[in-house]
Structure formats: C-alpha cells, structure tokens
Image (cartoon, rainbow, N blue to C red; front, side, top):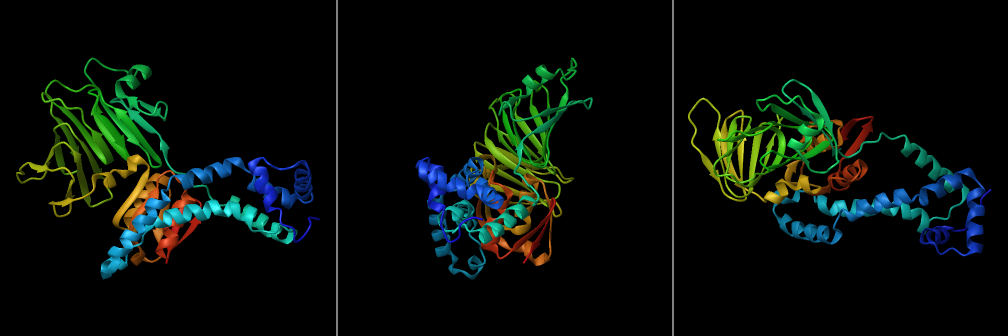
Length: 392
C-alpha cells in the first residue's frame, strides 16, 4: 500500500521540469507502482497533452486586461441598472486559472495517501463519463445549382471559390451557376469570392452567390452571420440581400447578423460606406451608415433604428472571442449552442433575461465557457448528452 502522510508533490513537479535525481525518481516510481489508483492519478498529473491544453486555454485570456476591465466596470456599476451586470471577462481569467490550478493542486498541496487517491480516482472516472462538447471547427458544404455538394474543411484556411470549382469539377455549365455555401452548427468558414471579396461565415449560416459575377453588378444573399471585406469595384456595385433588406456596398468591411430565429437583423459598419433599403411593400429610401453605426431592422414591426457600437466587439467572433455587451443570457446561449452544437432550456424562464457583459474565449473547451458563466452569474448547468438545463 502507498505510504501515508508523505507529500510527493515536489517530486511530481521535479519530474515535470526534468530535474529529478535518480534517488527521487526511484522513490516516486515506487509510490506510483504501489497501487493502481496511484498510477491513474500519476498519469493524469503528468499528462503533457492535458497540461498543454490547460496552458493554451489560460493563454487565451489576458488576465491583466480582464482585471482592468473588471475594475473599470465595477466603477461604472454605481447605477442600479449596472449593479445587475456580471463581469464575464474577469471571470474568464479566474476560471481559466482555477481549471489550470486544479491540475497543479495535486502537485503542490496534497499528501497523496491511499484514501485521497481513491477519492481522486473516483472523481476522475466520473469526469471521464461526462459528455464531450467541443468548440466548433472550420467546415462547410458547398452546393451547386444541380444539388451536388462538396464537404470543405480547414485546409487551406482561406479557400477561393473558383479554386473549389476547378478542383472538384462541379459540372460547371456555360452560364455561371448559382452556388450555396452552408456552414452548419459547430462550424465556421472563410471564402474568397471570384472578385476577391472575402467572406467569413459564422455557425449555422448560409451564403448564396454566383460562380462568377456579371459585368454590371455583384449580388449575394446571406442568412445567419457573416463578415464581409468587399473588394472595391466602382463599375460593379456589390449588393447583399438579407431578410427584409438590401445592402449596397461601396468597398468596405461590415458585419451582418440575420438569424431566422431572431426578430431583428443587425448590420454593423466597420469601415467604408454602405446603405440600406428595406424590402417591404411601401417605398423605402436609401439609408447610409457611418463608421461604427449599427442598423437594427425589427421584422415584426418593420421599424429600422440606428445605434452607435464598437464594430470590433460585434465582429469579435471571427477573432476568437465571444464578446457580450449588455446581452441577455438567452442571446448568449443561442450563440454558444450554435458554436458548441448543443441544445438547452431554462428551468426558470426569468433566467433567460439575466444580463451579462464581458468576453469568453471562443476556442476554449465547453467546460471553461460554462464555468465562466456559473462563476459570475449564480447559475448552474445540468448536462445530459448534448442537452443542457440552466438552473438558478
């Protein structure tokens, strides 16, 4: 049986650093081999892949920036409305440190006697049975007008539409065909169109576009969320059609969010110039957006309102972050469920309206994401397979 009341934590740390003496190596190995539970715990502590993963998760979070953001927002929290906010960015730093620290907890502060190893082993085995919910990856399906499809992945990271056509022989007719790029739940994709326009597509989004644009205009259709960097061509205006509106682009970068299960379409200008025209029965004038402005089209009422936002916050999803500014938990969960591909429900409907603000690393594992929300929102996630229930 393993020795009791003897801390082997310095030996584990030395093994990780590669500075164990032969005598220490023998002592540690004897303890590991004395009991299968010790071996299991040792494997977990010395798992380089796990340590690397935890390090990468922690490195995604700028702890100093998160701390400064937390201080700034706490100072702003004097108003009663602000007191209801939850500072996710700070929690992100804390949660990442807690998760990484859990690995080191076994090394730095635990006397690894047999009773403790038995408890730890049981915890590890129970954790292993938890469902695996992973972040999204680069993937999409491209359909041609005859319904033939091509599965696309992350190699290369940016794919030219014309290159796809030539490599996969999509039965291209003499007349340019219409193509449909579909990004499923748990996916994202970036593509270069025939005119050198670049489009980033978020999870559960669709882009319809022609194989080649005509001589007088360039026109595409979007559902879901997309970020455009449109190549300027004064002779061929670029149009983006979404639900209920048409956007004319004058060579610019902007973000569109138009999910069918949401009441509003959000169009946010980052640089350049765009204009909007509503597609309802009554005549609609052209409305121009200035840099940093967001147009919100409410579909039930057909009202169009304007607000000033930080464009980089709106399009943060393409840079590896979920950034939420005064967002209800319902909106946050919709975004997370599209990216991590899970289903969810609220045990208490009022919980859906709880307001959060801050950021979550987009490529962190799901456990990190929900721990951030749990730590700062007084909520709990009950997970069964791909189904999640949020409990107050």
